[in-house]
Length: 624
Ligand SMILES: Cc1cc2nc3c(=O)[nH]c(=O)nc-3n(C[C@H](O)[C@H](O)[C@H](O)COP(=O)(O)OP(=O)(O)OC[C@H]3O[C@@H](n4cnc5c(N)ncnc54)[C@H](O)[C@@H]3O)c2cc1C
Image 1 (cartoon, rainbow, N blue to C red):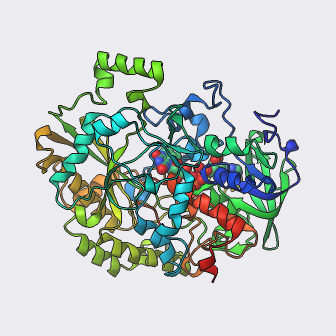
Image 2: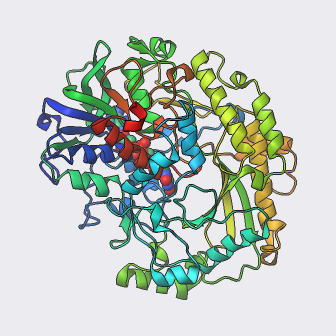
Image 3: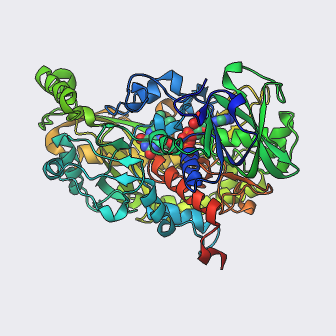
């Protein structure tokens, strides 16, 4: 059975024996790299993807299911179980043993098919930090990534009338216009959103930034991963797969799980995969297909599954591999360590006198507004239904939100960092953690890294704030009881570094200040619903966070970190796996430290840069 084009297969029988490149995972990064590598018309690429190609008849123009293409609300994809992996974290010791849903997209397009479409970058300091772990002349820096951010997305400015009425600012010099992945804007904004942004002027020191792509922290507008003409999600499948699938040198096999990278000694020579439909299988089963890579294997299975694929292939911490009965080919202690994600903290406020109309709540309570909204959507796909999760937020440095930035910075420097890692952590991984914490200690006291995120929706209630740089580090481990047929064990190790409580407490305290003790919001009459005024001290916050914290905003990174090997790194600056020839990792897992923003745009930029590293090698200055 062939799907859509002759290059896309659901049956391994149709796959060739040998390709120049094999890409494990047809997600955000994998499809970007595949598109770029096949642009020359000559290099042959096979993408092996666990999920299916969405061929739903919901949308005849793009073949996407409505769960994927619908923009409104931004959450449809993640609520569709057919598109998501079914993973629960291990019980979180510091969160009253709660388990947490680990969300990741399982479909051609990966998590870009199901994400909330917020199109943001981190700050320049976040990207410079990655390079700083190598040298001052590293080619991983804001300046060297900016061209790849521009290549990654095609920015389409917002409608002139909406721009004017909502006071949207942007600067196209930070954007490109060539990619088939679009950064678009809804054709409507709620007036309360602009008011909520302006109200940050009531707090001294809050920066306002003209464009979300400028690498600066502050309050700003940002676009949506959306095709502004179709008013549908724009993602790696529509922007890269659909482009590459027209080329005879691009093949993708869907519904196929890579079980291991095939190694000849310590050289990657291909991959082995099995049909997902076959259910549980033993390793080296008769069902497996082995395909050879003439040049390279590129692992792009995402922050949760890339470390799993490496570990199943014998590349990882020897102790974990031995316990799962897997022969160690390369003892690489960092594989699956250093898990980071953005914790979401509940801080819920409700306004009694929010007079800005219409507001998002009117969609539910005002029949006239909601009928108008449906009518303009039906007529020409405009109006409130073109908003995903919103386009405005505050991304603030720690000294802006906390009076104890210098104290917490000193406390972080003075910590015995290793004591907050699992007891058997390899010394190289511990050294990398220490380097990260020292870098964060500087960042906590500086105005260049955003720690605080509050999304502004224009409504009369607001409930979630995000810690953009948690200090705690988790793990992703193959399940020793059944490594080939179970999802990996994901342990966020939430709040394992106790300073996270202090930082998150200050994040909530600042949110209180914004809503309750701010001349610009006073008239709105905010009431605090959570945590409630009784929660004041760090100790009280520790209890509140244990009860309510979600350690994930679905942005897992760091598990195949780009760091020097002596700092527990898994890949070098060219994203090559240490100790293995012909093998790279290209996806969210290579971020050594989280960026202060949702991760998808950064993944696209990493993948664009990786495609150049693969085709042309490192930039000239870096090799000189
Ligand atoms: C629910 C949700 C909401 C989010 N919201 C936002 C947002 O609003 N804005 C934002 O910027 N970011 C958001 N993100 C994060 C962002 O989407 C991800 O960081 C990014 O897409 C990750 O890209 P990736 O290439 O690393 O992994 P993915 O895009 O997840 O790709 C990995 C691919 O590998 C496949 N795979 C895994 N294992 C195997 C295997 N063994 N064999 C074959 N294939 C395999 C997977 O099926 C998947 O297709 C969100 C993520 C989620 C899950």
